[in-house]
Length: 339
Image 1 (tube, rainbow, N blue to C red):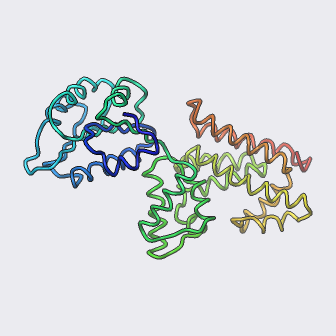
Image 2 (cartoon, rainbow, N blue to C red):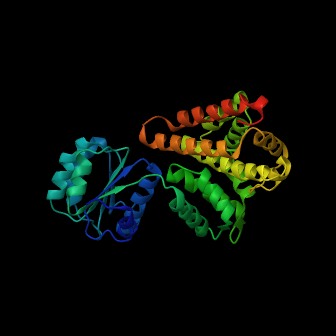
Image 3 (cartoon, rainbow, N blue to C red):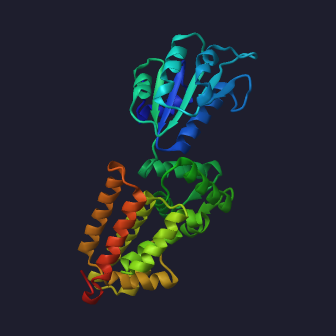
């Protein structure tokens, strides 16, 4: 049985008599989190030696016997398998035909559409659950939920910034938000400066610098900052979303300039605000773009993000090429003031 996104939350609360759960997809942290949640729900703990057994690639042949075994102290058992390939299917098929009420959890990050997924989706007492990085509203809800676990809240601007900045593996997102929650303390409210300070390199201070320098036409400075940001763990999708966020702010500021506001005033009016040297760089960058061309740059960023998900190319490479293009556009037009 293949579960869609609307069914997953309910299933994780009550898997019923399901005997097989296949967790697959690109988000290894989410796969692990869901496997742990199911294990705790069914067996009561992650490491109960009587009710939880873990099987590796070398012992796949034991899956049928472990599925049929009974717990010495009663209760339903869980059999977890973390190294999965389609070649395990004969052992799983044999286990599903045999006796026993144990729950078999297969953790399969990166598993493609093949025999194992087809089997899980076609079997009545099995569930196939896709685990992909959350985006948009789902990611915002996740961030809000993790903060709530620590009795911490965040203002809307900070939630938006975190949603646009953090992306990728669930465990990475959770780790960054938990650090922020601990910084705030119970009952605290996270603001954007706290978020930026706490998430540090992982949230992309270097990425912010690289994007701003690209918009200002500093090709070498931008490339050096982006290279350092990627080396420090910033992923390509996160980099593109940060670019979208900055370009959107620039577009609003540029509209204000075209309506008569000075560049300095437009920068001061930006939300979230810019301070220090970054404000001066932004004021200069705004003089290199028109509102209409910023819209085209925004659309190009969206197309690059789509390509990251559809072409199989490395997101970091595509994001870096996009920002190099931005820097060339701005840098090549400095003498013309606008392009």
